[in-house]
Image 1: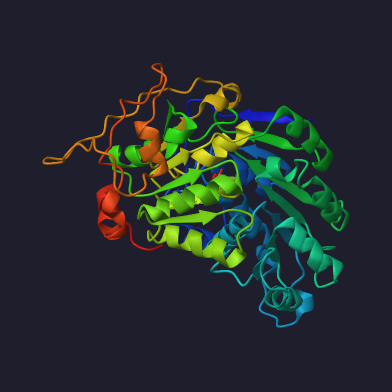
Image 2 (image 1 turned 90 degrees about the horizontal axis):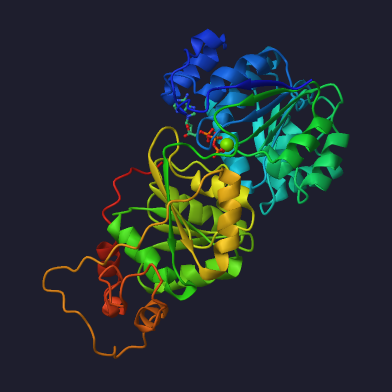
Length: 463
Ligand SMILES: Nc1ncnc2c1ncn2[C@@H]1O[C@H](COP(=O)(O)OP(=O)(O)OP(=O)(O)O)[C@@H](O)[C@H]1O
Ligand SMILES: [Mg+2]
């Protein structure tokens, strides 16, 4: 029977529960946690870790950015410590824990966390994902690993060519479990489950679980315990959420104006389609903004370069489809924009959860077009609250700035055209103008100057 362990809905995401030492984790793991700079476990960690250590199957839900990765990785490492050995024989290193994630970038990140947390233990791990060469992955698998992090498709490729044997897997983790159990991944997941022993411990983690997925998950779990931190389907409380009603044609202008008005050093800008992501990314680049694009049709190397540049602070606006919505942990990202609302309401929670992580504050802005009212209603139903709707800030005019009423000699940008086109009176946008948040029309001559006008210096060191 499913047992519910619910923390009070008001529990702050990073409230001090007790110490990591109280969780009886091995000294090597405690030392690694200390090296990571974690002082106290988060609520999901305090609640999930003892259950994983006790061998229970788990259905664990906690807000975005509250440390779910460590909530499964730390007790897994603890339970695997008896298998740690320095033998060079691959036979001494069968896969004992399998962690599945929906995207390549997330798989890589989860593996990095496993490496960090397990740095003081002679346990081997690797990550396999699509879009990258097979050879390196094959070599790592043939050498033997105790912990394997993978995206499903590539794992099946390796299993199909007998490079990896999953018959000794004792622990299965589905990160972003509701995504892994949805129609897109379910067929692959079922094929993987057939390769695993029936007697194993299965752990499901996500910030969101729909009723359908909760029902479905019962098929994969044995007497699971359900851990639910805070109200279901919520991003961290530290994310400020606000919406603006903006006609499609004015969204670029609105985005740039808000970036300026809020002094945002960086943001992820989510679109619904790859096409819009490409178009918006190009428009931003043309205006001299350091923008990069990440979506499923990009080569893996381009995806990783874009994400890496963003993490280092070289990229200021990362235009992304929902491929970047789940799990990615970008330190102190100040803001997320929904340039278009997502089709699936749960993606809203994951998208905005890229900011406001680990107790930091964050801003989530949704630009709501006329055609998106239904999507907004779906999001509000899902998060069980209505979104605060604001009016766009008036553009701040710098001293000596000449309002430009004359037609531009260069062809106008889309936003420029939109700004001078007529708008319905009910529109939340301020009167048509040439906001100085928009790059100077001379941007082709001085792209760098336009960037400086848009963004404050980025203070973070490369991570
Ligand atoms: N106990 C802790 N104290 C301080 N920071 C922590 C702690 N646990 C995890 N973190 C940090 O919090 C950040 C978010 O962790 P993590 O990515 O595991 O969140 P998550 O709950 O999986 O979020 P998402 O739902 O978006 O996947 C990471 O940078 C991680 O290093
Ligand atoms: Mg996560």
